Every structure is written in C-alpha cells, then in structure tokens.
Length: 498
RNA sequence: GGUUCCGUGGCCGAGUGGCUAGGCAGAGCUCUGCAAAAGCUCCUACAGCGGUUCGAAUCUGCUCGGAACCUCCA
Image 1 (cartoon, rainbow, N blue to C red):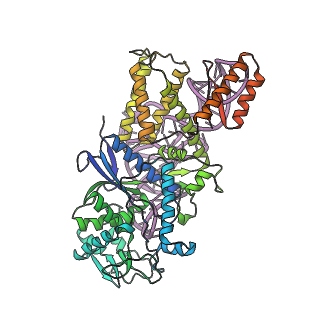
Image 2 (cartoon, rainbow, N blue to C red):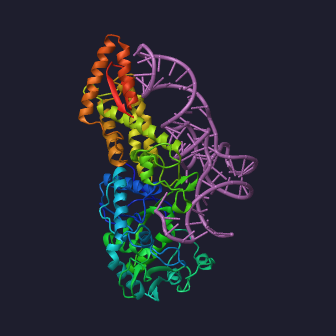
Image 3 (cartoon, helix red, strand yellow):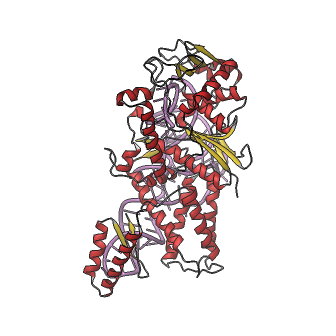
C-alpha cells in the first residue's frame, strides 16, 4: 500500500506523512466561534477533517483530535470601539454571554451530529483556558517578544521577523506588512502596525473580562489556539487544520507565539481547506451571502429550492478535493442528492448479494481485474492528500457492476467469491467508516417494513390476477406518499423512500 | 496597490506531458402489463493567442476574466 501524502501549506507541496510519535498522531483544528449560527461554509472544514481523522484512525494511528470552541471575545476591527463580539451581541439579544455561547455551541454540536462527524477527543473552550493563555503571554514578555501598553499586550512582530521567518506560511512579504499603509485608528499603542494583540484591556462596559497581571481584560484571538494546542498536543504536533482564510494572520501568528514559547515550530503539517463559494464569491458574513445550516436543512432560505439532508451536504463536500473551491448552487446540491441516492442503493444492493453461489475463480477475468483495480485505488487516492472525489468516482464505476450482478445482467459467476467479498468489505469500510456516509432515509422502522411487506403481497396477488387497477393504485398512492415501489427483474418488489 | 490562486463539456467537479475521470441534466435503446429503477450507447471539454516538445488541459510567455488574503472570517 502506498504512503500517505499530505499537502503541507508550509512547504506548498505534498509530503509523506510521518508522525512525531510512531503510532500516534496529534491533530488540532480551528473550531467555531460560537457567537452566531454556523453556515454552510463552516461545514467544510469539520467534514474535511472528520475524514482526515477517520482515515488516520483507519491507518491505525491513535489520534488525539483537538478542536476548540472560541467562546471568548475577539476584539472587533481595531480602531472602532474595542468590544467583544459576543458581549455586544449579548446586549442586543439581552442574554448572558455564556447563555448565548451555550446556545450556539449546542446548535453547532447538533449540526455536527447530523453531519455524522465524530466528536473530537478534546474540545477545549477559550474561556476555560484563560490561565494558560495568560501564562503564555507572560512567557512571551519574559522572552522579550511582547510588550505591555496601557493594560494591553502586543506581540512584537518586527523583532520576531528579525530572527524567524514570519510570513512563511501565508507567503507574506514581511517588509510589506510593515509598510502597508492602512488608516486605522487606535493603532498608536502598537509599536508597529504588524503587531497583534495578545491581551486587550477591557473597557468598563465590556462584559467578558478576566483579571490578569496587566489589569482586567480579555485574550487576543490567536493566543487561545497556541495555548490549548500546546497544552493538549505538546510543543510540536503533527497536523494543524483550518480554513484557508485563517492562514493569515491567525495561523501565522500562532506559529510566532508558539515558536517563542516552545522553542520549536509548533506544527509539522499545516492543512487548509478551501472555501465554499456562492456565485463564485466566498460565503461569509461580510459578503451577506451565508446560508445557515438550519436554513439548509429546512429549506427555509430565499435562494434554496428545497431542503437538503445533511448527508447530501456531506456527500456534496466530499465530491470535491478539499483544496479546491466548491461552488454552491441548487443544481449542484440536487445533483449530489441524486448521486448519493444512486451510490447508496448500489451499496445496499452489494451488501445484500448472497455469497454462497459464487465461485472460487471468476469467469470474467477482465471485469475481475478492473474491479480489483478500482477497489485498490481507494487507498491510493486517499493516500494522495485525501482525494475523496476520486474515491467516489471509482465507487460510481463499481455501481453498474454491482447492479448488473444483482439484476443478473452479469452472471453471478463472473467475479470470484473473494473479489465480491473484498468489494463488500472495502465498500463498507470506505462508504461508512472513512467517508462517514449514512443512509439518508433511515426512518424505515420495523412497523413500516411490515406494512410495506403487506402491500407488496397484495400487489403481487393483484398482478398475478392481472388486476392492474389495484396494482397501479398501490404503487401510485405510495409514490404520492414519497415511497417508490420497484418491480425487480426476478418478480420480487423493493421500495425506497425518496 | 501588494501577495497568492484559479479559469475544464448545459451545471458541479477529478486531473500536473501521451490513456473516455466521475456525478447531475439531455438523447436513443434494452428490460417491463405499464411505470420507476437498473443496464447499454451517445453528447468527448479544457478562457484566448504564441512558445517548448515526437506529443500539452497538464510546462512556459503574454492577454482577458474571476477569486482569496492583506480587516472579523471555515
């Protein structure tokens, strides 16, 4: 089996993955800011890295997966009143900040469960790690890379850049950062405009506030990830993931802070997922083009033609390589919906195939070889920087083979028993365990199955008597209810929920 | 303005020198009481103009168009 290669944003190339501690892997992914509802764009990293997590587990790594919850405030645009996002919203909604945070955290977890993502090993909150963050800031001051002004603390980027490569991750030219003239107020505290806040003094009306050696305030944005990653994954860990839009300044600053405190580069492999776009534009609050997950699942949004099942969204995302942009449209989502249905039915047909009659050797050598190749490539494609799009393409090439065997278009003896069994095993592994797909219509309870069985029997009797009025009525009424009845080639009947 | 990236058939998307990716939509056929599903077949594209090469969607130059980051952002 080939070696796992990961595209490292730091080196801008694919690199063979070797974990620091053999058999173990540490992965940190930037989590949500729970000051509002998650939207479709947010779904991408969590689904992407869920697959990474699942795949590393499959490769028998013991993975510690840390994904934070940002529940402490970040200053808004500097220059304006330095106020906490969460605090300001809380005033508007007349809620306790932590009540608001709890609400959106719950909503986030709810969506993550619907997406069938595996919860991270540790999901630390920023507010729960104020002490660690203060500790790290103190270290930075002691090391001479941070300075305090009026109760706020800033990181000295210029000094860091003199000794280290600030801008390497994001391809930033350091001189330009210093030169760029941007007219922002309230920068006079900073020695240089490229400096970033580690700790901000809190104005009296600021609700979220903590005591610190520099007075009452709240932590800067970048420090939380550095502090929590260090605490749970160590000075240096394997993978750090997040959206491309976090590369600068967030991840760049994270590297700087951690490098000074821990005397080593914090991350071996930086992974960044690309954006979801809508009409070619990034989906984001500032663009006013977001579709919240609750809207997506309910169809309750002007541009949505219908509701989309979370699994359809997951499939939609996995049909694209994570480093490419993904353009949203109703048409694209509906294509994904149909594609997933087709894949899933093929998958179920495969698992239902009775193996007893298969032969030790298949009669169709060519088909057998092709099938084996398609199956073997699952691993290869995943090892090539998690190319789920190609894995799915191969699955779709196998679906006609499966359906043909089921419908006896291809003789049952065409493939050997071992090939069929391998196909069943690998499809299950990839569809369910690695890609994390689930049946969209899982509502087929035992009672419904019983009722359907009854209707099928009645319809069979009607058909035997050539009473097509009754048989058509049963089928048409079920269709109207959203249940599709199919006459199989062998005279049996099957059904699916649309 | 700076940095980086992208431009693939009606739509979504793989794809880094030579082989039909795949999904959806559309057309035809087979199966079928009819239908749906399924199977088979077709639609064979790489923004434009040059260059390198036996050979380029893939490398290179220019042009046009779009995007991301530089400010909170997945």
